[in-house]
Length: 374
Image (cartoon, rainbow, N blue to C red):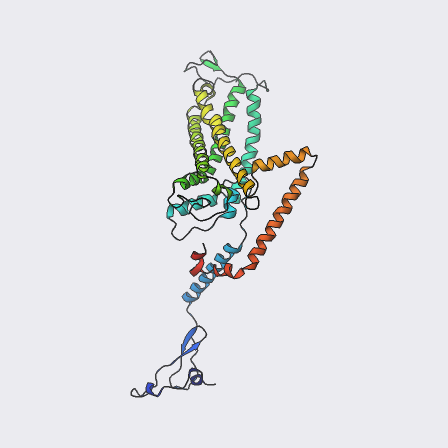
């Protein structure tokens, strides 16, 4: 069949007056191709695309594939020891198109807390902390009987109520010396873990006063519905939790600065320096951190009681279940087996729900409509 037959009969008016037959357009798939001059000749073959056009098409296809994979892959919680809560990672959504640069930077910091290398660092953190605590306790209780430091280290330049000055130098017990060194290491370790959690703590405090979330419950940082249990806690409880956790960050930073200033064992045992360091560090951390944790655990436990099929059990409910089973003489292996079976059932239900409507997920993978699927 000729090209002109596919395109339709030639238009006589197209050849009159000009002496030359005009170019006619015929459809080939999604593109357009011009017929050769002469009317009934075969259609001209399209020229191959340029190198630049090929690269652009490849980039577009690659970006579309990445968008599709990011939408359909399961959202797993981070490895143990990471700073961002697992519930946020499981229920998070991409930032909306109108997100500001500061909001996107916040998302980057929160995602940083889910990286596997952070969990690996946490393992090293524990390996350093455990022996450090053992040495600290041994020095504090004077288990080692190491005696006094042999070399004079601290001249008698200040008045000390805890150390004896002989020949111009303080006599310092080795346990006192190493106890102070261990507190320096512990302070640095806890400062690192506090700063690692600071983006999440700052984000939940900002959410309380954010215009996007004002007057809304059960929404994420952009005011969109979210199933993370923490977002369904009442606003007053979330405000208290956020204030306490951020006070813990401030106190730990102050504690670390004081450790850098008062960095010898003479000042460490003096008053009021020692008391100030104690109050800004362990005491403040216990009051703020434990207080915030108890409020959150009780609130999440109430959520689970009101909607057990929607919200998972909190830490208090899990601890209560362990105690109940131990009293009945059951082993913890049975409890963990039940948890695994329940998680497997939920995974199957989630996969079945995903398989029911695959077209909607695929449609969101295209850049033109992905913004509307957020």
